[in-house]
Length: 396
Image 1 (cartoon, helix red, strand yellow):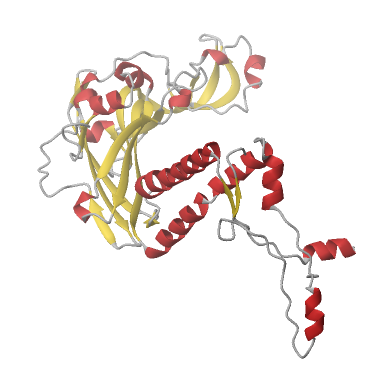
Image 2: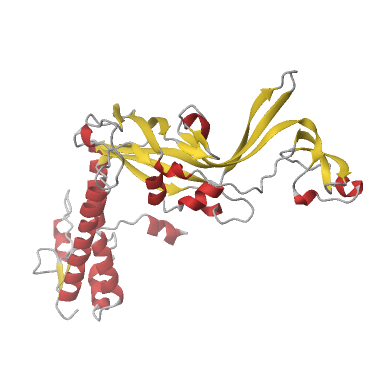
């Protein structure tokens, strides 16, 4: 216990040892140079660590789709193929539909082959099944060899193959986006002063245009139109606001990228693409309600906005400058490891670098003759040619 206490209450001070070795000197300077390059090139220039950042972006998005198409010899406009109608940051463009007209509330046979039957017992096991078309009654319609349902009849047959609306490729999507960085009180929009909304986005020649052709968006996302228009899918239009507010605020512009968001399920045998159902309701002359059911296969577009703004601030600058200066000392640690473990003169270096000094200091015998009110204590000194620093020659 006493040894631990004595070791705890010890004091260590640095001792300068000059090692005259070309190898260690070169390693030391290279290590220092690499550390300086890292902090200057990566930390300060690339990462801009001297800035304070704001990632709490506030954003609003409004969208508008334009274009006409023909489906089953019927002209379709925006009101027919865009869902929902509000022009929000998420919308769908319908490319294919399975329509079941003149449905009324009654009983009829299910169309799905899973519910094939010969007797009522074959259907009773499906009574608890959840179906989009209706509820299984437990009876077998022997003429159709299908289980009977109670719901909207005739039941939907979604195995029908329909052609897609090819004009969708030429539809245009207008995206209106405004953002606000509350920390810096900076508000920006993706509509420049020179934009006249008669342009089409191009990632090389027209990066500021907020109007996108559907065919171009799919091409930038590496998606085949024929495949996604048949089964549906989800596309992300990413708007990234990466702004350096040390420059003029007009240089704060959005960058657009495109990706398929449901890429993990595009080849799934269980669930493919994207589809949904909606109905249009009517009434007969005698007041009975009927409807036309639509199963729509659509391309869903999600507008995803992210932002990151930075501006010079003294505190992060000081912190990172101090960190850089401190890190340069890591080169000394590396050189010490090499000297203490890998070079021939390691023992000599250890002897010069580490030295224990006790608190009892020897006195000269001549001082005993002058013991008065003051005693002068003088440590034994070692001579050196390096002004207090020990030198180890080139043989290390």
